[in-house]
Image 1 (tube, helix red, strand yellow):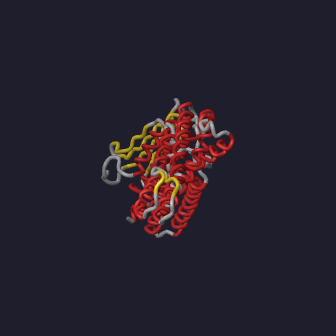
Image 2 (image 1 turned 135 degrees about the vertical axis):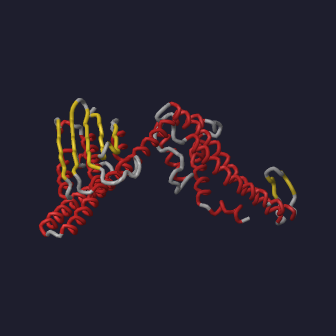
Length: 384
């Protein structure tokens, strides 16, 4: 019984009823003007529904009164973008008026019926009881009072659920809107993935350099070398903090431009950081690096950073060969270092996967893995 009556305790039940009553206000005004033509308001709704902004207004009302508090109500709040949307709006307006008329009639007539039945049960004569006609007072009419109350409950709850379902069907997002929402969601997921890569590459690189430098300084026992190691740790940590602040800025301000991200023009600090960690870096840059487009240069920087991080993390301070070539519409990045330990397996690790994903995102390709006695990372990124 409690579950049966629970909808009567929900505010949504009564906001939906209010939503059904609203169009009847217009009808009531018209009935004062001309009671002989009650169909005129329904006729006026046809051209009104063809106005694009009407769909937006109806969507706002429906969200506010039919689905209050729901995060994904399935009701659009944008103007009509096609004739299909306009026709759906017209059908919605007509259906809302019909359901509103039914709601007003039921919510006025059923309480009146309860009142008349109560009068008859109390011994008062009634001139005309709806659906009963003229009748004499009798206590047995009290047994009929629950019937219109149940009908009232069913009308209030049922019509509210029905108009909400119609709103989702007729005012719901069109195919174009669903596609746009899907594209926006995809962009958000891609942005989150990019930010995760940014954090992994920059912070992971800094921590790897700091750990290698600290370990080397402890093993060396040389004050001069320790000073250099501490300086390298400080510089790397400062750069990591700058990267972290930039990434957090992207999270705080989604429209912030990507121009502040490091590019291959800043690759010297990566090479110096690797050298300060004890690695011998042989770097060669061929071609006009300044002509590389921004997105390609930024992703190339991250690929080089991840490749050097992997060298320091897994091989330690070993000789590293870095080749950067720009030409023939292609950016060619190559990092090679001697293998100092068995390869755990192809394609393992989020860093190597991130290298391949970055290259694929730009329409290029990347290969990572052993090559003879070396570990070889090579990425080819198109400049177009």
